[in-house]
Length: 315
Image: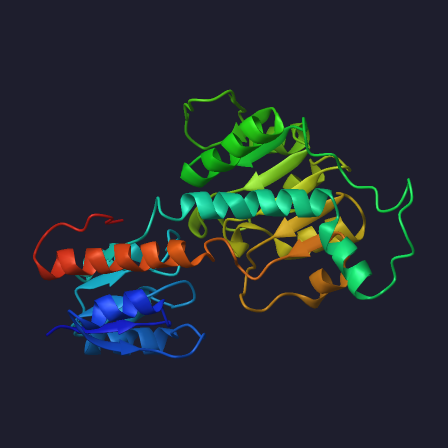
């Protein structure tokens, strides 16, 4: 029986399915594997089911490796050096498609919460500081009909755009490094800065790491309208957090909604001190049926490897 390491506790249905087929070890901590721990795991286990925060950098793939497959739990895999894994003979997969709708839903949650100041409003009520309804109380941004700008028009970007267009009658603009045709009304613009300046609401959905690291920098934020709303459901490292904090604190932009952070679970104190930012603890796929589907997809890739078949979701 092959030895399988699962680096975080998964839903019980996934653990039961894994234990029915493999000799399973489950880490019971929320902390990701360090590089040294990842290297040791590669030497000790036949297969690993890792996730965000596990540091499978190039240094982890040195030496004699027992592991043949890393079946990542999640669509983003910038914590895995896929090139180094390939050179070491370790296959890598991820879990696309099953995360698309849930992540897009969180994007809409953040658009609405930020524009309509829902976080501020709930804090007001919980603090028993609400003095009653008034015509000018907590005025926010009306969402219907506003122009949304999507940074990265992949599966999730398109799912957000469809919700905005069909649900809220929002004109859709998007920036994508390559030409991308979509099956709903939307217009691709040539540069990121053009998008940032033209849209009322910006939603970032690009993969993390690589050339996307701090893609949203001070210059990109400076191109936004002062009434602009910024939403990130991609990866935290896509944004220069210091520049975003400055833009929010100086009211260079109106607000932000964030589900991801550069050094999770650490969230800068400066974000918590601001009223015009909505902060979520990486809830993008946090629905039981979605997490179960992700876990099963990862297991299906490990089973394919065990049986000598191509990985269905190889990266």
